Image (cartoon, rainbow, N blue to C red; front, side):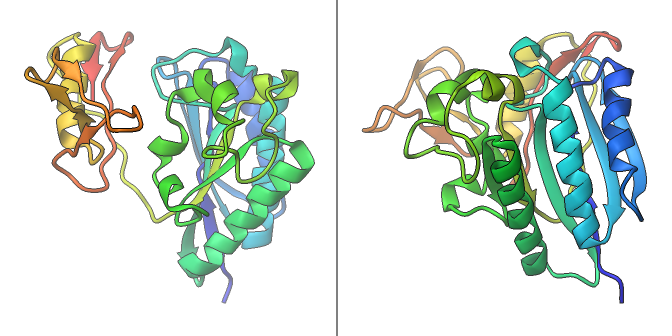
Length: 257
């Protein structure tokens, strides 16, 4: 029985379709690839690509896509509503048929190691592929986004699992990539009858598993509570495994969660 893995890389470009097409073109050079979806977003400046194929071919296609993105996307000039820290921001592998999560994790590690060795891009492994418990949650790996990378990758705590931990011109351009293995997820946006990002974020913080920063007194304006190591303390949100954020979508003229 043929093993099938889905790959859903997210690229930090959602406005220039010529850049996006260069990436999808290299993906489609791999034999057997089925390109299922290409979903660009202007406000987020991000494109989600979905393709399926057999395991060895999924690694080859993902590698070529990450390589191409690192060549044609400059993260030092990137801005958008979505959190991000790399030209290829995330690259998760999802088991589809005749393959276990444990097997998929091995392929994710194989991809991560190849990207780090051959392209020297900082690589973090997350979700089921995490090599450290604190890296299982993508939000932890991507904390501070691209702007925090220069200081984070040189620390013992957040040294990449593979690839460069030196902030040189190449790393400055490519940023970092999170490679993971996970189950299917459902992603959807809720339009609010407001243009306020603060209101959207307030709801998102209450709903998401990570919750919101704990404060003394008022939950929004109060003094931030920190632990003995000076790190912010979080109050968990309502729903386990849910990630959420608020932003304003100009083309719709409303805020979204």
